[in-house]
Length: 472
Ligand code: 5AD
Ligand code: SF4
Image (cartoon, rainbow, N blue to C red):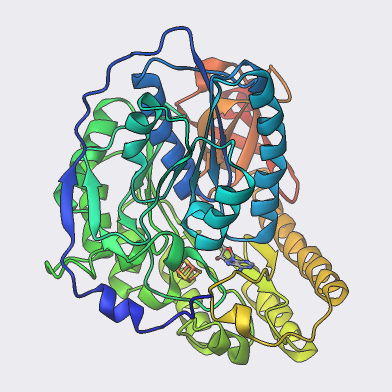
């Protein structure tokens, strides 16, 4: 097992980053063939899957949602918690069975799980029916590997990268909202987290390339862009070009696309300039996802989070004071090794004080290779589950409370898609990222409309288009 070394972050900065263009010379060599793609994990993976879709469709494959119909299966995996990994291995059983019926089927695994050496060893020895294993740094190698289909398992994984690929193309899931990668990797090394190992060193794209991508998306009619990074507000720190995330955010805002979001911010990199830009531009959404992880200073220290609760609170209240009607959401881990009842109580206390609009809560899951995986842990799983339930009940009560504040109010909603449950409804998001179900036709998709909120639940709102309210 590799012991994590906090110095790696410093060493990683020493080699210069190279910026390379992907050459798009794919031919549609596959006719009447289908691909089946499953994505696990975070927005980064969802966006990577848009890149994968681009390659598969450029080669001539058509999408299918039915596994049995597939000629290529791609599983884009996640390593953040054990349950994400379990889901992938569960699915592999079905793929193995299908391969027996269809020997020409190409099975490909990619994503964060493929950046863990012990997983590769397991796949190499116990899952030889998998054709292609590819890492997070070289997705663009996928078309060549599919074309060169080999009788033996092809493994193309690089453990780290000093490269940033530009000119990447995507088959985007939405015509309304688009993801834009602005940084790759992470140098923070929170002790529980596998991301610095699976995604490599922190590296920023050049500002001019990002701004060009935003311009193109605006010209194509997109209403919203979300700037993406594991540590989005560390943007620019590795470039030493004199600009940072606040500079980039302001330049993106000036382009005039109607809505701009960014995820995920680290409290340590959250500057006053960022707060000013969010407050100044109407098209930078008043929504900040600001993971706190724990309410206990002792646990935060063991997590290597680099802030105290007092510092987090100061930042939280500064954002609330300066950005009108801002919504703040967070991530919380319960059951970090040897979390005491007092530590957990401190987490409940901070949730009560901050009244987060929403919180994503997780039971700590040890990841091989991280520092926390070596820490002693005497807390039972039953106790951790009890704490998670208690935390969720509290978090949900505040989500409901913040949603109820909108009852009867008229808010701006960007309609993003048709409702899956009701053909007479569409869904969209408020500026503060709250999901709203609205009565209305698909002609509303892609529009920002005034919606009056008629019902508030913990996880969503119901509303009607304002003109309809007026005519009632
Ligand atoms: N166990 C549980 N939760 C984790 N996260 C990251 N690593 C782990 C882990 N090993 C959570 C953090 C992070 C979110 C994306 O996932 O809360 O912010
Ligand atoms: Fe993981 Fe986020 Fe910490 Fe980076 S900042 S190590 S991605 S939790």
